[in-house]
Amino acid sequence: MTLQLQLLIAVASAWGLVGAVALTCAAVRARNRRREYERRMRDGDPLDTLVLQLRLGQIAAELRRLAESHDFATAHHTRAAQAAYDALLAEACRRAGLDVPPPAAATHRTEESERLREELELTSRGWTW
Image 1 (cartoon, rainbow, N blue to C red):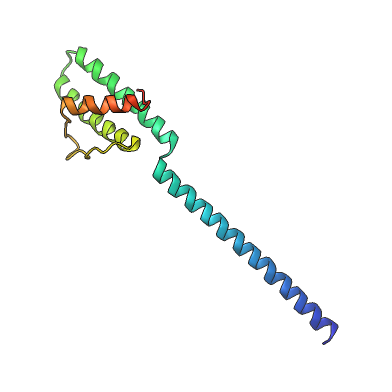
Image 2 (cartoon, rainbow, N blue to C red):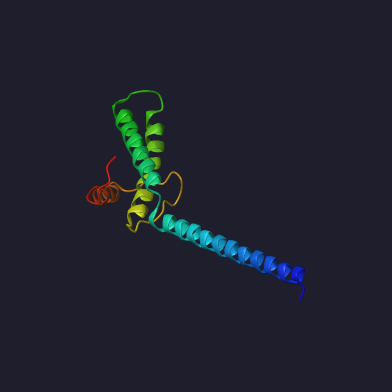
């Protein structure tokens, strides 16, 4: 074998090794990203949970304001806000690991006793809004 041929084989082997290392690193990064995504899907993003708690507080404040109001279409606004609150409460329960059925429709209202049970369960698990 000539010196040039040996050099060519050595360079090709080195590039093959570099390619194998690069592919291995890419596979490890992809696996880590997939595991992180699966963990976030399973556990939920803490910031999404915080946003949900804040939104629950905003809707609850809106319901309190509407209860004291005598403006035009207050009943309609109260029904809409109550449906939104019920939907957010159900989502919060699912994130906290409680088994609650999803609302049947966008305007579905939860019974008062069920709503109270969900609120108490969330409060007992450390949720505040």
